Length: 172
Image (cartoon, rainbow, N blue to C red; front, side, top):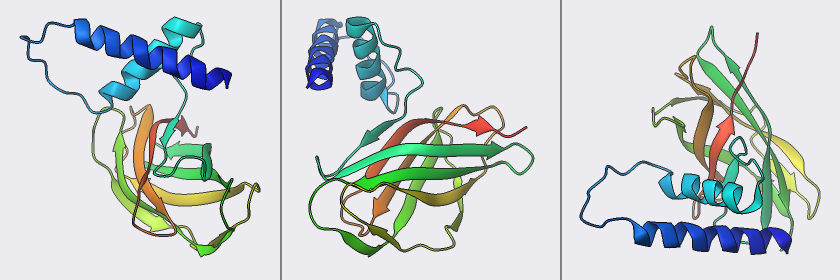
């Protein structure tokens, strides 16, 4: 409940600052600008540092909970292996579901290629039991990239999930 109130306050602060900007000045649009502004609003109103936190956008609210288990980059190969921790938190269990990446880019907007899907693409999601899902190996990752933005599907291609600002831990 506390997070909801804080996010609401941050959202209102972002809206107020956007309304106060001069509308006659045209500025280039940056992908993720609203989400970045929302994070800054949370930081300024709460004092919490959320700049290095991955943010997930859900197509259905209250059905899934997703977090990053790991995102490990290999500078020599130019790849990143993304593993998500996924839990279904309401509804009916999903049996034989897959997790498929549909878009990937660096936080700077550089589009990336896809490698292979996980070895076992079917997962059983029980209510309230998180499992680690190796999503995909992402190729063409520049060695100076710090974070990834991804779009992926779980079970069907009707609604996409989005992960923003997923930090890359580069292997030594």
